[in-house]
Length: 285
Image (cartoon, rainbow, N blue to C red; front, side, top):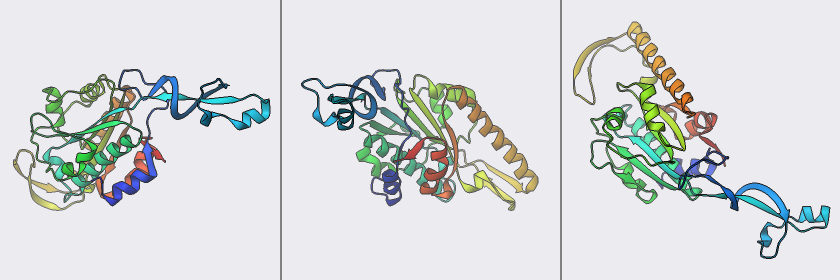
């Protein structure tokens, strides 16, 4: 996915919406409290021998006849962990949902790398230990099937993978599994410096249409059920989906985490330009 044209176009047009204020922590800090060479201006002070002359402010010199240097806030590379739901339910939507999920994970990793970060993508499936992919391994990630039988809630409940303290934590999942949103979000937010929750659905999951009687097979349990998908059933389903999304959004607000629901069929570029930018997870470069 490093060479995916869509990912590259978005990576060239956007940057991560990382906090602009210091985030407490050790190696997870985004902006330090000292001065350094980041792009965020902090203050002026009078030039002293040994200062970097590239930071001289000639406009200030013209006004005051005193050499002044610009001081910039010290940046510490953010440690970013991207948690990608690798369960079978992410395969719905004729593969588009899985493709966009991998594109998003790859994009977040690449953008973190642009600011000198140390990103990793954890594919949350039934493998033990959970495999982590670095930027150079993103093409390997794209080739991995989504075939996990255990849900994100199962893995979190079993402490199947360690979460790094004071990291920027990004979670990509459909969240269409039995769980308590408040409990799950609190677990995901625990000891993170920043948490972003991205719910990714297929178009049919987000807005199904009547199709009459069908036999449905649960992709994770292989259980078969005969259902009539009519307007009454769809209305009930959409009420439950809306309730789930409202609970996720409410739980995210409690831990100050942005939450965004995406429909994969809209494509990566539209999702990044619209929903992810509106949620301030991304911003124009």
